[in-house]
Image (cartoon, rainbow, N blue to C red; front, side):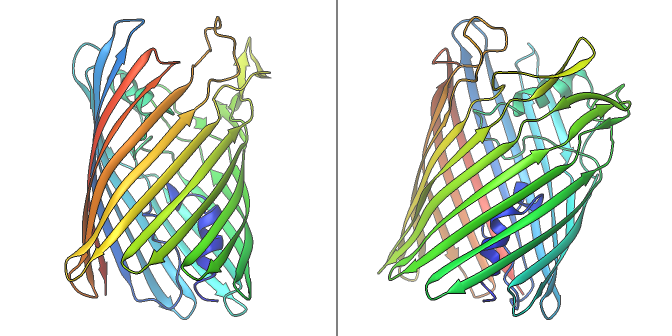
Length: 379
């Protein structure tokens, strides 16, 4: 049961998922461990309609650790630093600094069937962006780019979460809820009292063990509060529903992890003539992603893997003649990775991946290169 609770937590965790490695869920009773990564991406964006062509690059350095305090209680810590730059404004502009820091305490009860957690989002991230930095920040938020750091600072936050997990024979299932309470902060210069609104998330999930691994799935629903500026309602993000289905397979020296992820969005609300109005059309398109990782264990050497993924962002709900229209985007990724455990305490890895695709119904050509390094330490 101790390892069952990680499945439930992974399906709904509020804040840590944005900067935590995918294998860093809670496993009670494990020793203290930490990990660090270095990721570099370089993109070229070529707009056939406007004739604009520019480069966008980013390096990203996340650090994560969890520390067992006493039986069934752990402290989790994560933070990151990132640097982004582009020449899209006709000259080189950059945005660099810390991301926010997340600190949480998690405790399990009733033979690890129940998980309770509370934590803080500490505002160490870069805020009060100037005009040039805002240019970079707007590019990072594009849905069709798979950049690791989409934003930097988001202000102070307090979150609570609870989860329940159960196991019957080879079937595991669970559910969880969480609430994030955000304080106001200054995202850009001359804006001092922006409150992004609170967030509520609920999720259910399940996993079925089989002879060679397991099959898992989860459904997660995110609801967002109204964002205010000087106590005036200015924006409300539409709810987001996620569905994921995947499988892990181990057969002799082969290891396969693959699956799909679907993300559905409801319409946003925007300020129009002083009034918050919900658009009839979706402001952002739905997303579909396929991912796969096929590895082969080279005896006494390490695990070598081939990586394949595909991402599609559908056109939003507006007519093509509308100024709000964003066309369909597709992105393919192919790469290779290698991971080696030098001892029971130290594991290191390297990854390289090439990206290609298009956005805005094929009118924008995309190409990218990603290089990643990883180090994991168990004490």
